[in-house]
Length: 338
Ligand code: UFG
Image 1 (tube, rainbow, N blue to C red):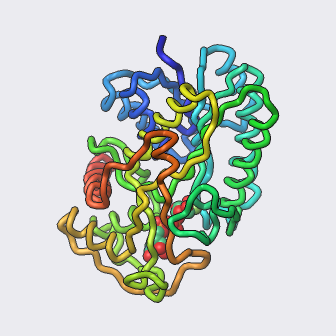
Image 2: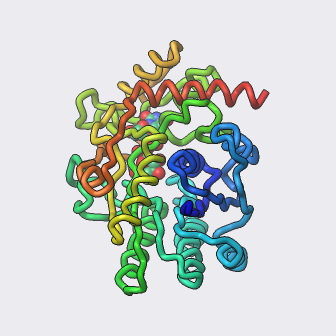
């Protein structure tokens, strides 16, 4: 019988790509989303990619009654929890909203799961839990810290999970620490929501390449990195999505949890990313050097060896693939918006 997986935040950027990967791997998938940061037409787009209608429950993870109803009405074998706020800058302005949505949301979900006897969970964490990394490449054993309320919320969530697993009620949990997810599905039908002015580098570059924003500011060129600009471990969202399928399979197979990095292990600088995007899009990307952004680290990249050992996970796509699929999505989403 097919395993049934509930994806909270399944209509969002990483959730939607994971939906496709799970359906392709033969899982039966149910999306729970309140569409606070996802487009309404994502389920239709998912149906186009997979050839099957997407089943969606519109609900907020803070609404315990709705969660209980879902678990009472549906047979669910496991949950992947994406639904959360994710903007560092916004978290500094609204720390309580981040604690409520990210921390209370997780507690609520785990209580509903526990009640229903569903104790297999994959949790969407972030390399932000390493704070300013003291070890490069960063292994999972590196010290944990936080630099903003968003990072704090992810760290607290990881600790809540750790203590719940230790309570010995039969929980198996996979904690996935994402590095910098970018790119889009090769169909060009799903990607990162293009509305508003992006905070993150690749969506900003995409808009500059498309002429929607005039120029990119490169935040600092005096870091101790080869070209002076910030270095990050960009990972294709399609690779990242497959990491979730492999995490779920490892939980089923091993009967025990894991905490792993999902990255490529290779860092690229801001200038390298700009040059690669220019090549992939065949557009000029005007940029200027601006002051460093508060709280930014010089470099961040994963030691990906544990994910390979425990999940059999290895990223396959390179930076050019990430830029190319981002560009296809950028053009497609601009067309659909017109
Ligand atoms: N950058 C620019 N110009 C921009 C935007 C970013 O030069 O307009 C630079 C940054 O200084 C950094 C790099 O591009 O060197 C990447 O910045 P992003 O904002 O794309 O990503 P971050 O590494 O800062 O943040 C990401 C996620 C966070 C997460 C963090 C650590 O967005 O959610 O990784 O894991 F907390």
